[in-house]
Length: 200
Image (tube, rainbow, N blue to C red; front, side, top):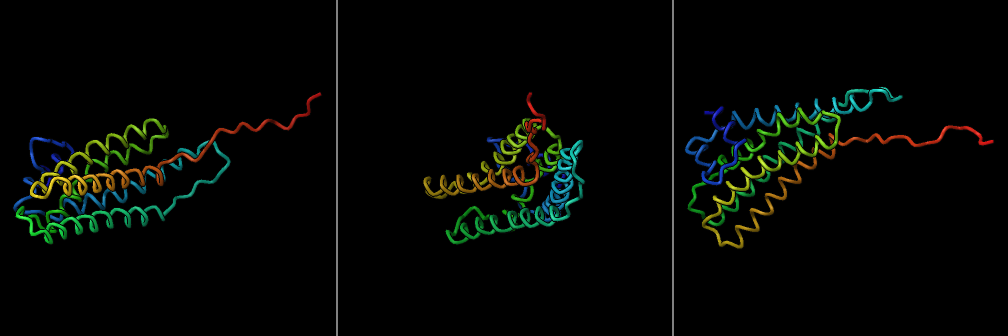
């Protein structure tokens, strides 16, 4: 069951509803380990990216343990706060969809599945490769999450559903961009300083 949910979370399908994969028995096992794995894969890959960048430079590379703490804080805040707000809104609106907090927590946890392999590949020290990987992550993870949220809000007024879906999609894009810009941005620039020679 968990493997099936992991698989379908990486394949957005407009013709189906990913929430059907989670009901009637959402689990916390899969989402929890997706988040934990992502925490360490981002921290390790981010440090590897720094290491590869430091090769040939006159600097001593050191492992940055703060990246584990920072990635854990961002990821777990994201997968707890936003699902709570979404389920809270649907409870307030007395939605007939039957979606509970456990469903939205599970949804957000599984939506990060594709980011695990992509975060490992982001240690490749080519910015153009990293941006392609980031776009792939946004397209797959973002599409699955956006399509599912849109179908959850089918009973809401269309304008409200569009606004909520657009805001949550934008926050998801920002979430992915945050990791790219903080953990995987090259800080080295080629030196064009001329040599100390005196022109005769």
